[in-house]
Length: 407
Ligand SMILES: [Fe+2]
Image: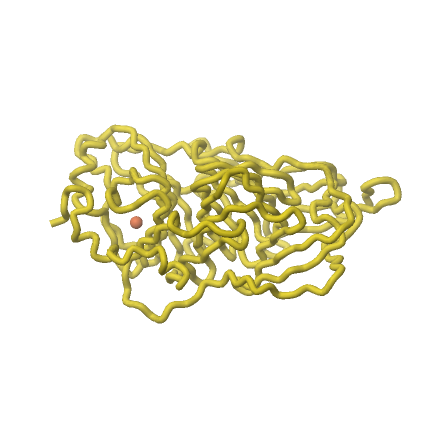
Protein backbone atom coordinates (compact mmCIF):
# COMPACT_ATOMS: atom_id res chain seq x y z
CA UNK A 1 0.00 0.00 0.00
CA UNK A 2 1.34 3.39 -0.90
CA UNK A 3 -0.07 5.73 1.72
CA UNK A 4 1.47 9.14 1.09
CA UNK A 5 1.76 10.99 4.39
CA UNK A 6 2.56 14.55 5.40
CA UNK A 7 3.69 15.13 8.97
CA UNK A 8 4.64 18.52 10.39
CA UNK A 9 5.12 20.97 7.56
CA UNK A 10 6.82 20.81 4.20
CA UNK A 11 6.79 23.05 1.13
CA UNK A 12 4.16 22.34 -1.50
CA UNK A 13 6.84 21.97 -4.16
CA UNK A 14 9.89 19.80 -3.45
CA UNK A 15 13.31 21.42 -3.54
CA UNK A 16 12.15 24.99 -3.14
CA UNK A 17 13.24 27.65 -0.65
CA UNK A 18 11.58 26.98 2.73
CA UNK A 19 12.22 28.20 6.28
CA UNK A 20 12.12 26.52 9.69
CA UNK A 21 11.79 29.96 11.25
CA UNK A 22 12.53 33.43 9.86
CA UNK A 23 16.11 33.47 8.50
CA UNK A 24 16.66 29.72 9.21
CA UNK A 25 16.65 27.77 5.97
CA UNK A 26 15.17 24.27 6.29
CA UNK A 27 17.54 21.67 4.82
CA UNK A 28 15.96 19.11 2.57
CA UNK A 29 16.94 15.44 2.50
CA UNK A 30 15.54 12.68 0.27
CA UNK A 31 15.34 9.24 1.90
CA UNK A 32 14.68 6.85 -0.96
CA UNK A 33 14.89 3.20 -2.02
CA UNK A 34 15.91 1.69 -5.35
CA UNK A 35 18.08 4.66 -6.29
CA UNK A 36 16.03 7.66 -7.35
CA UNK A 37 13.25 5.39 -8.63
CA UNK A 38 11.54 3.74 -5.65
CA UNK A 39 9.47 4.88 -2.69
CA UNK A 40 10.81 8.04 -1.09
CA UNK A 41 10.19 10.70 1.48
CA UNK A 42 11.46 14.26 1.65
CA UNK A 43 12.55 15.40 5.06
CA UNK A 44 13.13 18.97 6.25
CA UNK A 45 15.86 19.36 8.87
CA UNK A 46 15.57 22.36 11.16
CA UNK A 47 18.99 23.91 10.53
CA UNK A 48 21.68 21.23 10.10
CA UNK A 49 22.37 18.47 7.66
CA UNK A 50 22.52 14.84 8.85
CA UNK A 51 26.07 14.76 7.49
CA UNK A 52 27.53 17.20 10.03
CA UNK A 53 29.75 14.89 12.11
CA UNK A 54 31.66 16.57 14.94
CA UNK A 55 34.15 13.80 15.80
CA UNK A 56 35.89 11.02 13.94
CA UNK A 57 33.74 7.95 13.51
CA UNK A 58 35.02 4.59 14.67
CA UNK A 59 34.06 0.96 14.24
CA UNK A 60 32.65 -0.65 17.39
CA UNK A 61 33.65 -4.10 18.67
CA UNK A 62 29.95 -5.06 18.38
CA UNK A 63 29.72 -7.61 15.57
CA UNK A 64 26.22 -8.46 14.30
CA UNK A 65 27.40 -10.64 11.40
CA UNK A 66 26.09 -14.20 11.17
CA UNK A 67 29.01 -16.52 11.87
CA UNK A 68 29.33 -19.26 9.24
CA UNK A 69 29.26 -22.96 10.10
CA UNK A 70 31.27 -25.57 8.23
CA UNK A 71 29.21 -27.39 5.57
CA UNK A 72 26.63 -29.61 7.31
CA UNK A 73 24.41 -32.39 6.01
CA UNK A 74 21.09 -31.20 4.64
CA UNK A 75 18.53 -31.16 7.44
CA UNK A 76 15.48 -29.33 8.80
CA UNK A 77 16.04 -27.14 11.86
CA UNK A 78 14.09 -26.16 14.95
CA UNK A 79 15.41 -23.17 16.92
CA UNK A 80 13.84 -22.01 20.18
CA UNK A 81 14.19 -18.24 20.26
CA UNK A 82 12.58 -17.81 23.67
CA UNK A 83 15.60 -19.66 25.11
CA UNK A 84 17.98 -16.91 23.93
CA UNK A 85 19.25 -15.21 27.04
CA UNK A 86 17.84 -11.69 27.38
CA UNK A 87 20.65 -9.18 27.00
CA UNK A 88 21.36 -5.65 25.84
CA UNK A 89 18.96 -3.52 23.85
CA UNK A 90 17.24 -3.76 20.47
CA UNK A 91 20.60 -3.31 18.73
CA UNK A 92 23.14 -5.11 20.88
CA UNK A 93 20.65 -7.87 21.75
CA UNK A 94 20.02 -9.11 18.22
CA UNK A 95 21.17 -12.59 17.32
CA UNK A 96 21.44 -13.77 13.69
CA UNK A 97 19.94 -17.23 13.21
CA UNK A 98 19.37 -18.01 9.53
CA UNK A 99 20.76 -16.04 6.60
CA UNK A 100 21.31 -15.85 2.87
CA UNK A 101 22.63 -13.35 0.36
CA UNK A 102 19.80 -10.85 0.72
CA UNK A 103 17.90 -12.05 3.76
CA UNK A 104 18.72 -12.33 7.44
CA UNK A 105 16.40 -13.83 10.02
CA UNK A 106 17.29 -13.32 13.65
CA UNK A 107 15.79 -12.63 17.01
CA UNK A 108 16.40 -10.08 19.72
CA UNK A 109 15.67 -10.94 23.33
CA UNK A 110 16.61 -7.79 25.19
CA UNK A 111 15.95 -6.00 28.44
CA UNK A 112 16.95 -2.35 28.01
CA UNK A 113 15.86 0.75 26.09
CA UNK A 114 18.39 2.27 23.70
CA UNK A 115 20.22 5.07 25.56
CA UNK A 116 18.65 8.53 25.08
CA UNK A 117 21.71 9.91 23.27
CA UNK A 118 22.25 6.91 21.00
CA UNK A 119 20.47 6.15 17.75
CA UNK A 120 20.59 3.32 15.25
CA UNK A 121 20.47 3.07 11.49
CA UNK A 122 20.47 -0.18 9.61
CA UNK A 123 22.48 0.50 6.49
CA UNK A 124 22.34 -3.14 5.43
CA UNK A 125 18.69 -3.93 5.32
CA UNK A 126 15.05 -3.02 5.62
CA UNK A 127 13.74 -4.44 8.88
CA UNK A 128 10.55 -6.33 9.63
CA UNK A 129 9.89 -7.20 13.26
CA UNK A 130 7.28 -9.48 14.73
CA UNK A 131 6.70 -8.76 18.41
CA UNK A 132 6.49 -12.00 20.37
CA UNK A 133 6.85 -10.55 23.87
CA UNK A 134 7.06 -7.06 25.32
CA UNK A 135 5.89 -3.62 24.43
CA UNK A 136 7.47 -0.28 23.73
CA UNK A 137 7.95 2.61 21.36
CA UNK A 138 9.86 2.92 18.14
CA UNK A 139 10.96 6.55 18.13
CA UNK A 140 12.35 7.76 14.81
CA UNK A 141 12.86 10.97 12.92
CA UNK A 142 9.44 10.26 11.36
CA UNK A 143 7.60 10.11 14.67
CA UNK A 144 6.61 7.54 17.25
CA UNK A 145 4.99 4.11 16.89
CA UNK A 146 3.76 1.98 19.80
CA UNK A 147 4.05 -1.81 19.62
CA UNK A 148 2.82 -4.74 21.67
CA UNK A 149 2.72 -8.52 21.22
CA UNK A 150 1.28 -9.49 17.85
CA UNK A 151 2.52 -6.37 16.06
CA UNK A 152 4.59 -6.27 12.93
CA UNK A 153 6.88 -3.24 12.66
CA UNK A 154 8.44 -2.27 9.33
CA UNK A 155 11.51 0.01 9.43
CA UNK A 156 12.97 1.16 6.10
CA UNK A 157 16.72 0.85 5.62
CA UNK A 158 18.48 4.02 6.79
CA UNK A 159 15.78 5.16 9.24
CA UNK A 160 17.32 6.75 12.34
CA UNK A 161 15.64 5.33 15.42
CA UNK A 162 15.70 4.34 19.07
CA UNK A 163 13.64 1.70 20.79
CA UNK A 164 12.15 2.49 24.17
CA UNK A 165 11.11 -0.54 26.16
CA UNK A 166 7.94 -0.35 28.27
CA UNK A 167 8.10 -3.88 29.61
CA UNK A 168 10.68 -5.87 31.53
CA UNK A 169 12.05 -7.50 28.40
CA UNK A 170 11.13 -7.99 24.80
CA UNK A 171 11.43 -10.77 22.23
CA UNK A 172 11.35 -9.79 18.59
CA UNK A 173 11.63 -11.89 15.48
CA UNK A 174 13.79 -9.67 13.28
CA UNK A 175 13.95 -10.04 9.53
CA UNK A 176 16.27 -7.98 7.37
CA UNK A 177 16.09 -7.69 3.61
CA UNK A 178 18.37 -5.93 1.16
CA UNK A 179 15.17 -5.11 -0.71
CA UNK A 180 12.28 -2.90 0.42
CA UNK A 181 9.50 -4.65 2.34
CA UNK A 182 5.97 -3.88 1.21
CA UNK A 183 2.45 -5.24 1.52
CA UNK A 184 1.76 -8.23 -0.73
CA UNK A 185 1.14 -6.90 -4.25
CA UNK A 186 -1.59 -9.42 -5.09
CA UNK A 187 -3.78 -7.81 -2.42
CA UNK A 188 -3.35 -4.37 -4.06
CA UNK A 189 -4.95 -2.86 -7.14
CA UNK A 190 -3.02 -1.18 -9.96
CA UNK A 191 -2.95 2.09 -7.99
CA UNK A 192 -1.46 0.43 -4.93
CA UNK A 193 -4.71 0.55 -2.93
CA UNK A 194 -5.82 -2.54 -0.96
CA UNK A 195 -8.40 -4.41 -3.02
CA UNK A 196 -11.86 -5.19 -1.73
CA UNK A 197 -10.65 -8.77 -1.16
CA UNK A 198 -7.51 -7.80 0.77
CA UNK A 199 -7.07 -9.13 4.34
CA UNK A 200 -5.72 -5.70 5.42
CA UNK A 201 -6.75 -2.16 4.42
CA UNK A 202 -4.96 1.14 4.80
CA UNK A 203 -6.90 2.37 7.83
CA UNK A 204 -5.66 -0.65 9.81
CA UNK A 205 -2.01 0.33 9.53
CA UNK A 206 -0.46 2.21 12.50
CA UNK A 207 1.32 5.29 11.19
CA UNK A 208 3.98 7.42 12.91
CA UNK A 209 2.75 10.09 15.29
CA UNK A 210 4.86 13.15 14.61
CA UNK A 211 6.67 14.91 17.45
CA UNK A 212 7.94 18.52 17.43
CA UNK A 213 11.49 18.98 16.05
CA UNK A 214 14.38 18.66 18.51
CA UNK A 215 16.42 21.75 17.61
CA UNK A 216 19.09 20.88 20.19
CA UNK A 217 22.87 20.97 20.30
CA UNK A 218 24.82 18.30 22.18
CA UNK A 219 26.70 15.10 21.45
CA UNK A 220 24.54 12.43 19.84
CA UNK A 221 25.82 9.03 18.79
CA UNK A 222 24.52 7.27 15.70
CA UNK A 223 25.35 3.58 15.30
CA UNK A 224 25.13 2.39 11.73
CA UNK A 225 25.13 -1.29 10.78
CA UNK A 226 26.96 -1.85 7.52
CA UNK A 227 28.94 -4.40 5.51
CA UNK A 228 26.78 -7.28 6.72
CA UNK A 229 26.98 -6.60 10.45
CA UNK A 230 29.82 -4.29 11.39
CA UNK A 231 28.70 -1.27 13.43
CA UNK A 232 30.24 2.19 13.15
CA UNK A 233 29.65 4.90 15.73
CA UNK A 234 29.28 8.44 14.39
CA UNK A 235 28.90 11.65 16.38
CA UNK A 236 26.53 14.48 15.57
CA UNK A 237 26.51 17.83 17.31
CA UNK A 238 22.75 18.14 16.96
CA UNK A 239 19.77 15.93 17.81
CA UNK A 240 18.92 13.63 14.86
CA UNK A 241 15.16 14.06 15.37
CA UNK A 242 15.26 17.60 14.04
CA UNK A 243 12.65 17.46 11.27
CA UNK A 244 10.15 20.29 11.01
CA UNK A 245 8.22 17.94 8.76
CA UNK A 246 8.31 15.34 6.04
CA UNK A 247 6.21 14.07 3.18
CA UNK A 248 6.28 10.82 1.26
CA UNK A 249 5.75 7.08 1.07
CA UNK A 250 8.83 5.82 2.91
CA UNK A 251 8.56 5.69 6.71
CA UNK A 252 8.28 3.14 9.50
CA UNK A 253 4.86 1.75 10.30
CA UNK A 254 3.30 -0.97 12.42
CA UNK A 255 0.54 -3.41 11.73
CA UNK A 256 -1.13 -5.64 14.31
CA UNK A 257 -2.03 -9.21 13.41
CA UNK A 258 -5.43 -8.63 15.07
CA UNK A 259 -6.10 -6.52 11.98
CA UNK A 260 -5.26 -9.25 9.50
CA UNK A 261 -8.59 -10.77 8.46
CA UNK A 262 -8.03 -14.27 7.08
CA UNK A 263 -9.77 -15.34 3.90
CA UNK A 264 -11.74 -18.55 4.25
CA UNK A 265 -12.27 -21.15 1.53
CA UNK A 266 -14.36 -24.29 1.43
CA UNK A 267 -11.18 -26.34 1.09
CA UNK A 268 -7.64 -25.72 2.31
CA UNK A 269 -6.26 -22.21 1.61
CA UNK A 270 -2.76 -21.99 0.17
CA UNK A 271 -0.30 -19.57 1.83
CA UNK A 272 -0.57 -16.67 -0.71
CA UNK A 273 -4.09 -15.94 0.57
CA UNK A 274 -2.50 -15.36 3.99
CA UNK A 275 0.35 -13.26 2.70
CA UNK A 276 0.98 -9.94 4.44
CA UNK A 277 4.35 -8.70 3.15
CA UNK A 278 6.66 -9.18 0.23
CA UNK A 279 10.23 -8.11 -0.39
CA UNK A 280 12.22 -8.04 -3.61
CA UNK A 281 11.04 -8.96 -7.07
CA UNK A 282 8.81 -12.03 -6.76
CA UNK A 283 9.26 -14.64 -8.00
CA UNK A 284 12.89 -13.86 -8.82
CA UNK A 285 14.34 -12.79 -5.45
CA UNK A 286 13.34 -11.60 -2.01
CA UNK A 287 10.64 -13.32 0.03
CA UNK A 288 6.98 -13.56 0.96
CA UNK A 289 5.80 -13.26 4.57
CA UNK A 290 2.51 -14.94 5.45
CA UNK A 291 0.51 -14.58 8.64
CA UNK A 292 -0.99 -17.88 9.72
CA UNK A 293 -3.74 -16.66 11.94
CA UNK A 294 -6.64 -18.68 13.26
CA UNK A 295 -9.48 -18.73 10.77
CA UNK A 296 -12.53 -20.67 9.67
CA UNK A 297 -11.10 -23.95 8.43
CA UNK A 298 -12.41 -25.49 5.23
CA UNK A 299 -16.01 -26.67 5.58
CA UNK A 300 -16.13 -29.07 2.66
CA UNK A 301 -17.33 -32.44 4.07
CA UNK A 302 -14.06 -34.09 3.00
CA UNK A 303 -11.67 -31.13 3.55
CA UNK A 304 -8.29 -31.88 5.14
CA UNK A 305 -7.52 -28.72 7.18
CA UNK A 306 -3.89 -29.74 7.86
CA UNK A 307 -1.45 -28.70 5.16
CA UNK A 308 -0.10 -31.13 2.59
CA UNK A 309 3.52 -32.20 2.52
CA UNK A 310 5.21 -29.68 0.27
CA UNK A 311 8.39 -29.44 -1.70
CA UNK A 312 8.71 -25.85 -2.90
CA UNK A 313 12.10 -26.35 -4.47
CA UNK A 314 12.80 -22.65 -5.04
CA UNK A 315 11.95 -21.51 -1.51
CA UNK A 316 13.70 -21.91 1.80
CA UNK A 317 11.07 -21.65 4.52
CA UNK A 318 11.32 -20.10 7.96
CA UNK A 319 8.30 -20.41 10.21
CA UNK A 320 7.97 -18.65 13.56
CA UNK A 321 5.38 -19.97 16.00
CA UNK A 322 3.86 -17.34 18.26
CA UNK A 323 1.70 -19.94 20.00
CA UNK A 324 1.55 -23.73 19.96
CA UNK A 325 -1.84 -24.19 18.31
CA UNK A 326 -0.57 -24.82 14.79
CA UNK A 327 -1.78 -28.36 14.09
CA UNK A 328 1.06 -29.45 11.81
CA UNK A 329 3.67 -29.02 14.58
CA UNK A 330 1.56 -29.68 17.68
CA UNK A 331 3.47 -31.28 20.53
CA UNK A 332 6.79 -30.18 19.15
CA UNK A 333 7.00 -26.40 19.07
CA UNK A 334 6.91 -23.91 21.92
CA UNK A 335 6.01 -20.19 21.78
CA UNK A 336 8.93 -18.53 19.96
CA UNK A 337 9.94 -21.69 18.08
CA UNK A 338 11.41 -21.12 14.64
CA UNK A 339 11.63 -23.90 12.09
CA UNK A 340 13.83 -23.72 9.01
CA UNK A 341 13.10 -26.05 6.13
CA UNK A 342 15.55 -25.75 3.23
CA UNK A 343 14.02 -25.86 -0.25
CA UNK A 344 16.05 -28.92 -1.14
CA UNK A 345 13.98 -31.01 1.28
CA UNK A 346 10.25 -31.76 1.28
CA UNK A 347 8.52 -31.24 4.61
CA UNK A 348 5.20 -32.29 6.01
CA UNK A 349 3.02 -32.03 9.09
CA UNK A 350 4.06 -34.14 12.05
CA UNK A 351 2.41 -37.39 12.99
CA UNK A 352 -1.07 -37.99 11.68
CA UNK A 353 -1.95 -34.30 11.68
CA UNK A 354 -3.96 -34.84 8.50
CA UNK A 355 -6.31 -37.37 10.13
CA UNK A 356 -6.53 -35.41 13.37
CA UNK A 357 -7.39 -32.22 11.51
CA UNK A 358 -10.70 -33.66 10.23
CA UNK A 359 -12.15 -32.59 13.58
CA UNK A 360 -11.32 -28.95 12.71
CA UNK A 361 -13.50 -28.81 9.57
CA UNK A 362 -15.62 -25.69 9.56
CA UNK A 363 -14.34 -24.60 12.97
CA UNK A 364 -12.44 -21.53 14.06
CA UNK A 365 -8.75 -22.18 14.76
CA UNK A 366 -6.57 -20.04 17.02
CA UNK A 367 -2.98 -20.47 15.84
CA UNK A 368 -0.63 -17.57 15.19
CA UNK A 369 2.52 -18.10 13.16
CA UNK A 370 4.62 -16.11 10.71
CA UNK A 371 6.10 -17.77 7.64
CA UNK A 372 8.88 -16.43 5.43
CA UNK A 373 9.45 -18.15 2.09
CA UNK A 374 12.40 -16.99 0.01
CA UNK A 375 12.36 -16.85 -3.77
CA UNK A 376 15.45 -18.54 -5.22
CA UNK A 377 17.56 -17.66 -2.16
CA UNK A 378 19.12 -20.48 -0.16
CA UNK A 379 19.49 -19.80 3.55
CA UNK A 380 21.83 -21.36 6.06
CA UNK A 381 22.02 -21.53 9.83
CA UNK A 382 24.41 -19.20 11.68
CA UNK A 383 26.73 -20.50 14.38
CA UNK A 384 24.95 -18.21 16.87
CA UNK A 385 21.82 -20.39 16.50
CA UNK A 386 23.38 -23.62 17.70
CA UNK A 387 22.77 -22.94 21.38
CA UNK A 388 18.97 -22.98 20.90
CA UNK A 389 18.81 -25.74 18.26
CA UNK A 390 16.65 -28.82 18.88
CA UNK A 391 19.04 -31.62 17.91
CA UNK A 392 16.24 -34.18 17.72
CA UNK A 393 14.20 -32.27 15.15
CA UNK A 394 15.43 -33.99 11.94
CA UNK A 395 14.20 -37.37 13.18
CA UNK A 396 11.07 -36.03 14.87
CA UNK A 397 8.71 -37.11 12.07
CA UNK A 398 9.28 -40.67 13.26
CA UNK A 399 8.45 -39.85 16.86
CA UNK A 400 5.07 -39.83 18.50
CA UNK A 401 4.89 -36.07 19.01
CA UNK A 402 1.13 -35.70 19.20
CA UNK A 403 -0.20 -38.88 20.64
CA UNK A 404 -0.57 -40.24 17.11
CA UNK A 405 2.61 -41.53 15.47
CA UNK A 406 3.31 -41.29 11.76
CA UNK A 407 3.75 -45.00 11.32
FE1 LIG B 1 5.96 -25.42 5.00
